[in-house]
Image (cartoon, rainbow over all chains, first blue to last red):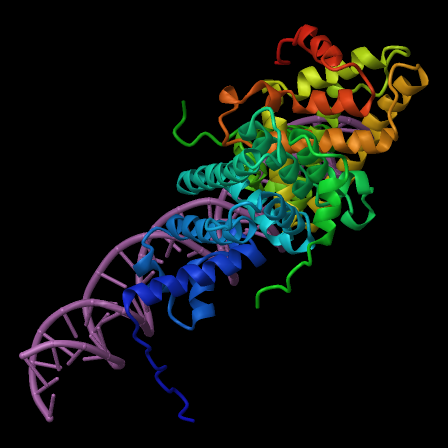
Length: 220
Length: 220
DNA sequence: CACGCTATTGGATGCACGACCAATAGACAA
DNA sequence: TTGTCTATTGGTCGTGCATCCAATAGCGTG
């Protein structure tokens, strides 16, 4: 090989490149944290020069917000698909808990923690977090409403029930230090328990359903 | 004044200076966040040179951990005093909730969020967070045990009840974006509700007690 | 095949930070 | 008062970052 081979330039369409950048940034956000999304780092991962990243995202904060938005949107879609079959509210809720309380959710849980904290210093990100919070709340509320219409759930207020469930999930996710494997079952299952209570389900009924959900293999 | 007046040096005992530094850092942590604790910043606040700070804390991370530990320890002491009168478990618990769910707790809530996230990158801080988590859990557990011994509480397991309460508190604290003033009461009171349930108290009994606690004026 | 558009490069600039160190001056003891 | 100890200074150095820009080369168009 020539000693100073001028590196080959790969030229892509702006849309493709942009998507590539955001995708890579979202992965970094999930695995290493939002503060690891730097021009240099993303560029290195994609084998391009940092200047290119800043060409597509003149302000770094914009990329961070975009990365979070993408990751959160994708995860929500896996938790509760927007297009979902009718009459399956209970199953969908069980699926939701199976994933959101399992170890596969750890990265996402950390990402929420990360984003909420970083929002303090990054207004653009803060807006995105607010949007995603609303999206998650609204979609869960929608699911609860469906189940209520189907006569499966009987909440006082589906919107309040949704918030309570999300609050508990966030609380559980935040307790990273209380060694998760040593947690009492009452703690681990707290989100499901809250749901059962708020939705007027028999104690343990939802839990057994959740435990029956086969956790799908991680998407590689 | 002389144009280039050599600034006066104030010489203090290492203990006093060290305490001064940690105290200032703790204040910064509470009001602006742990990442704002920099050698330069703390030095400026104390009207000394940055080199002095790094003399007492050769590694910056150490100061950050110390600042968090101090802030958390002080707050816990205000929430549940270590030296407390016997036979007052219910009142103490009401006092605990009055403060930990009020707006005065916002800074502390944010600091926990901050510390938990930053722990990801700072091992020394992570250890401190784990220690503080244990301290908070243990002290609340102790209070619940006292109340149980007094016959006021009737939990299945005081330790589990304590964790559940703290999880809910953390979950509520994390939801900074869901505008707190617009929260349904069921959400705002969720921590107290959880306590009532886990401790076998009549619904609303603890809540009315909490609302009756006069929130003391902020310590200036 | 030649041309022009623009995606991409490579390098420069400035900033904030932690870390390090020899020199200095305050305070206390002799 | 003099002397000594050490708390404190006032720099320096290197790192990693975002941001900016003129030059370049890939690719579609004619």
